[in-house]
Every structure is written in structure tokens, then in C-alpha cells.
Image (cartoon, rainbow, N blue to C red; front, side):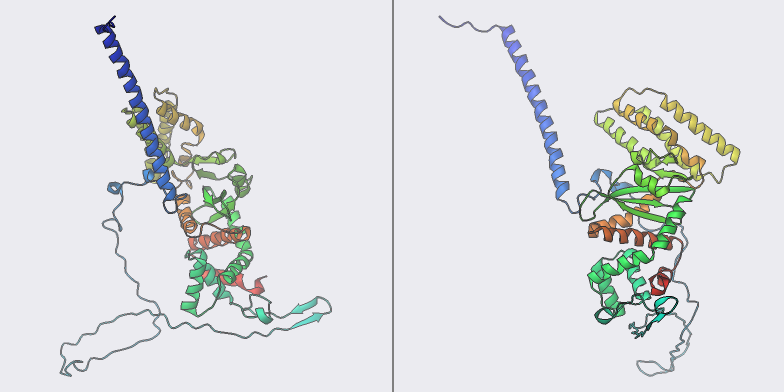
Length: 454
């Protein structure tokens, strides 16, 4: 008996079922392809040089938006200034043509100032000291300003205080590696030094400049505004953190194993009365200090949420409304010297009311809600910079001071030992602070390197 042929309705239903199944499978394929692209991107990121610390491509500024190299149009010109002291004068006459020995007419004088470095040769001083016994003080010894150690015998050849200060300068201000510091001292000054000897020199120098480091801590704690940031670090292994606390005149580096609020409290102390400017890391929140959160970080978060909405084919009026007052905070802070006190206070009050109005809204999209929740968490710290003249709208000051340390991390991958990290944080803090204060680094460190200073 022949099988019955399917009806038109049965065929149509079968086609619909197969079409639905095809659509479901195509959706799975798209999801898997997207996942595959993400995994491939992660694999590429992991195998690129310095992948753990390299900035992601999505965060880089597009080429079309990058600033043009060089100074802005109309900036004052720059040239090498004329030396204030002339050590030697040389006159080169022109009595005749140097080529054919013919007569020369229309001779005009032309002056130049040439700054040259004479050949550098280390000065070796043999220092003989004496020891003895005092009936009142016990064993005593004589000392000379050039001494940096009491070691003698096989270890009796030392680098003087200026040479040691120069080594600190090259290592922690110029950012040279251990090997390049040794090579530079030998090529330019004729001083022989090994990497191990340099490491020990820097550790001793860190102990000797400890009073300067303690003074930096006091400066930070008594500043009206402190800018803080942190980044990952190595001390023989990962999971260490480099903290920075900076002001216009002082910078303090700390390398700690933790990333918690205890580091902030230990650094600033319980009596800190200034304003802490930082990003939105939760480690800064528990402390009861006055705070301001970086506007640039808020704007970047806003941009991220707006891009997520655009991927879904949507635009957001809510995020645009948030962008206006955030940028207005930066503009108002820049114009604070131009505005009269009454006008400035009126503008600040207007910004507070605008922010409160936006916080009271209930946006429909998840991305808009996420940004509104971020602003709610930082409600008390959104406009802090407008009430403290020493504060700034962004945390760029800390990020700029952190950048040289990040470059060091790319070159050396941090420190190998706890002693090395202690020497690094002390010497980097001291050299950076002295440079900010306009001091001569070598002369400022000279007395600290002397044995007489102990």
C-alpha cells in the first residue's frame, strides 16, 4: 500500500521548523566565532612583548586624534644661552686667504661660545687615618671628608662621595640599567665598577639618605592636596604594587605587597587634613580624608558605556547629559582665577545642582544605570577639586610621575630582593623630589654619601 503524500500544511510546518533550526545554529556559529576572535586576541596579547604591562590597543589614542609633535604655534623660541663665565678666550686672525695666501678685504669679526668637556680622569687620594683609645670615649678614629667607608685591606679601594652621588643620579634619575651605569662611569670618568658593587653601593646610599626620605613623608602628610596612584610591580615575583603619592614639590614611592587601604593610611597618617586626589580604586575609600575622584577616569568610563550602547545600535542622551557637567568641572577649575568669588561660587552651586539632578534620574538602559551607579558611589567626591585650590580635576599629576617608574619596570621587571626594592623606593623618591625642587642632585647628595655624615 503506497505511503500517503504529505499535505501542503505539513510541508510548510516542516520548512518553518527547519528554518528555525537553521537560525538557531547560525546564532550559535556567530557566538562561537565571536568567542574565537576574543580568544585569538587574548593569545596575541599574551605573546606580544611586555604583554602584562603594555597598554591595550582599545585604550590608545587614534592617530587622527593625536597631538602634532613639537610645541604649539606661536611659542617663544629656544636657544642655548650665552655662558655667564668665560674660562678662556681664543682669537683666530685672518691675515691672508688660507687657500691661496692672497689678500683679504672686508674682514668682519664673528664671535662664538663653545662649551666643551675636558678629559675626565679620576683623582686618586690616599687617605691615612688613625685609631686610638680615649680614656673618656673609648676607641676613636680620625676621619676625612672623602671617606665613604672604614673598610681597608682588600676592600680598601672606594668610590668617593661625588662618584657615588653620580652613580645614584645615573641609576635613579636618568633611569639607566645597572650595566649601563657601570659602563657610563667607566667610559666617561674612568671609574671601574661591577653590577654587584653598584647594587651594594645603592643599598648603602639608600640608608644614608633615609632622613631625606623621612622628610618627604612629612612633606606629603602636610600638603593641602596629594595625588595618588598605583601599578603592579615585581620583587622577585609578581603580586607586588608600586604606590605613588605626589605633590608639585615632593614625590613619594612605596613598593608594597598589598593593594589595600592600609597602605594609604600608613603613608598619609591619621592626621592628614589635605585632599586626596585619586582614581576610583576602592582602596582609597575607607580613609576619612577629604577626597576628589579623577574626572578623566569618569569620562573614560562614560566613553566605554557609550561604546557598549553603540554596539547595540543605540545612542544615549543620558550619558551625553553627564558629559556636560563633567567637562564643565575641568573648565571651571581652569578659569577659577578669572572668575570673581561670587561668580565662582554661583557656578559651583550650579554644578552641584546639575549633578544631583542627574543622580536622581532612573535611566532605562543597563549601561546608563551602570554609569549612574558609579556616580552614586562617588557622590561625595565628584566636585571636591572645586573646593580645594591645591587639588586638580584629574589625577594626571600622579600618572605623569608614575610613568618613569613604569618604563623602569619594562626594562628591569622591577626588583629581585626586598633590600633592592627598599633602595629603589628611597632613592627614586629622593632624586625625584630634589629634581622637582630645582636642586642640584649631585651636590645635594654629596654630604649624605660622606662617612662623616653618619
